[in-house]
Image (cartoon, rainbow, N blue to C red):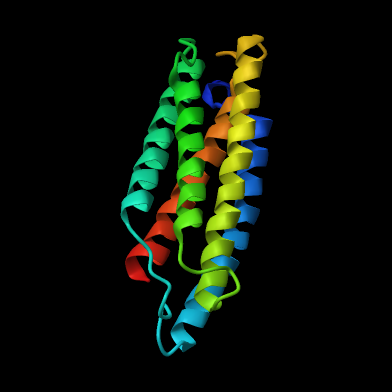
Length: 187
């Protein structure tokens, strides 16, 4: 490779690389949860058990919120990388993520089963609860990125932290699509 070819390459920032490595470990964690779910589901006579009814309206609304937040996160990251700032898109992403968590909490308050009622309850609350913790962690990270951007610590010349946070946010959204499909659609 010639020197001009090497100079034309862009390198991944350290925060982005670190986040991709972290996401790899999180994939294994969620893979274990999905493995447990499908193993127990495959051995159960009746699945989900009686009394484990889930409504679809709230989860559909929260899914739309989270998928929309992924789009706003992309626009915020692209804006910062191109020197246009993040405008309203990062705060909109944060708000959509917060609404997702509020809907999840409201849904929990309306469910007719508890974590200890049966295996489905244990898996449902474990899978959605751990995902909710990841969303909360993502929100904290996004707020910290917003503070760094407002202090001019992150900009077009140094977008690595927001890029890494964006990778994490997209990962959390993708996991939710799998959770929603597994717990609410396939059941």
